[in-house]
Image (cartoon, rainbow, N blue to C red; front, side, top):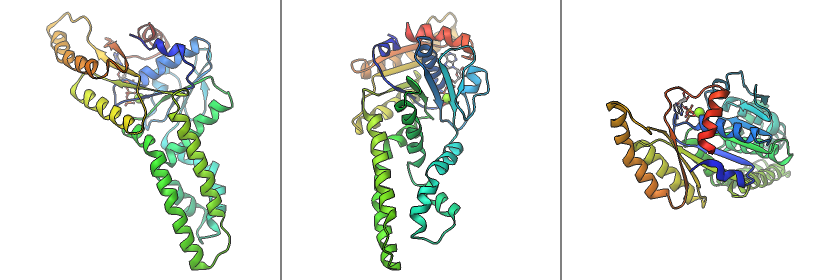
Length: 307
Ligand SMILES: Nc1ncnc2c1ncn2[C@@H]1O[C@H](COP(=O)(O)OP(=O)(O)OP(=O)(O)O)[C@@H](O)[C@H]1O
Ligand SMILES: [Mg+2]
């Protein structure tokens, strides 16, 4: 089994998720390299707290899109939550201030800082950023190396939390308006335009023609629990996961240590196969003696991941 099934689809965004340290960045980078090498203009984005693309591509990636050395068609971007917040403020700050300042007598920074901590704002911005790049055709494909599991779930919570937040806002607005006997209602226009934006981005993510989510896990108890949790969360939102990568698998043990490890892993691999074999493409990746770092190693891994 391999990820090459994806070759026959025309997905625009591939998201990799799973618990910390299981190989999300490794698999994202390999996939991005695969499609870039196949001629699709590809952007890999990491929105993690700790920069990791710089390590794996052995170059300074950073917060602006840069070509990856030695791989045609491949661009990379590492964007931290702080940077996301900064750009959100740049993009939406003036609009928010204009709307809100007619209601409350607060400084620009105070208002913007307050609104910027609303639930889902960060994820909203990331999705908006990605969508912008997909829609204007700047890239054929975006590979998104998401932060460890919790954040992916938060992303799915976004429409609910965000719309709930928005529903509260008019109430607050009307109270303020009545208290201060104001006439203008710019805040409601702003809320409407946000609602439309939130709807657009979540529709895009939920549309299986556009987006695929690939779950990465390891054959250990924690890996299995985490996979179950994620699959369950996705189900709750009416989303299916079609690809499961089981990483760090011992294939041919030649010493007692590795035989014991393989024995530990096998029941978990079987469990995952029982539970998801019918509905998902399951790909097992061997544990390598070396870390996966540098374009040459990624090319080796590409052969394993894509057959
Ligand atoms: N199959 C493998 N064999 C050997 N080493 C591996 C394998 N897969 C990943 N690694 C190594 O394991 C480490 C963690 O992998 P990676 O950074 O891809 O995980 P991650 O899920 O992105 O972690 P984080 O949650 O911290 O972002 C890296 O040093 C990587 O080189
Ligand atoms: Mg990572």
